[in-house]
Length: 140
Image 1: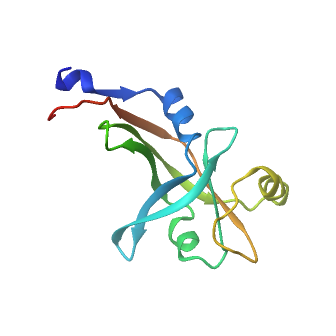
Image 2: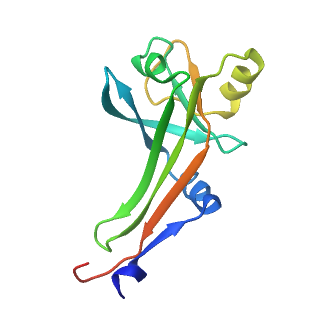
C-alpha cells in the first residue's frame, strides 16, 4: 500500500455518519486570545449540527456563544495504524427558544458532568471535513 492509498478525504455524509458513532469530541475555541481545546460529550441534531450540553455558568458558554468554532472527533487504532478524524466548523449559539430547549432535553446530549441547570449549545455544520488513515503495518 502506497502512502497515497493509506490516506483519503471523507465526504460530508460519511463524516456525519462517523461523528454519530462516537460520544466525545473536542470543541476548539479562543479563550483570552489564546487557543483552547475542551473535550466534551455531544450528539448530532436532525439538521446535522453538533449539540453540546453544559452549565449556564460555564466559561465555555461565555467564550463561544455567537462565535465561529471548530469541533473535532476521531477514532484511531494504534495497533493497526488506522482511524479517522472529522472537523465541523461553524457558528456556536446558545439555544434560547423554550420549545427547542424542551425538545433537546428529551433528545439532545446529556452532560457527563453533574449539573443543576442545562444550557444547550448548537454548532452549525457550515463546513465539515474529514480524513481517514487506512491501516498499514510498516513505516508510513
